[in-house]
Image (cartoon, rainbow, N blue to C red):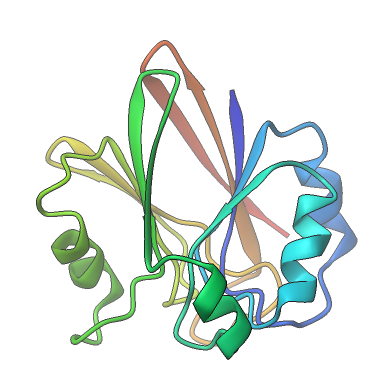
Length: 158
C-alpha cells in the first residue's frame, strides 16, 4: 500500500509535480490546513482521502473533519493530526495528541517543515508543504509505502 502524504496546502495553486507524484497512490492523507472544501474535492478525484482539520481551515471543513484520525493499514496503526495546539512546537503537540494511542506512524503538518524521524516506537512524519514554503527550505510532500507491518517513508522535494 502506498500513501500520499500532504499538508498545509492553504488553498494555494497546487503544483503539477504533486499531482504527478500522487498518481497511483492507494490513499491520500492530508494533515490539515486545506483551508477550503474545494481542495479536498481535488484530492478525492485522485484517490480516497483521510484528512484532519488544521488551524487555518474554514468553518465548513472544521465541522466536517476531525481534529485527529486513527486508522490501520497493512498491520500499522496510523495517527493523523495537524500539529497545532497549546505549544508552538508541532512535534511536541503531536506527541501529546497520540500519547495514549501507541501509533506506529504519526503524520502531522503545521510547521511546513519536512520531518521524518523515528522516536521510540513511533515514526513521526511531516511532509512539509507542496506550495507554501513559509518557514520551510523547499516545497515537498510525502510518499509512504507500507507492507507487512513495515513502513518505508520518503520526503519528495518539488
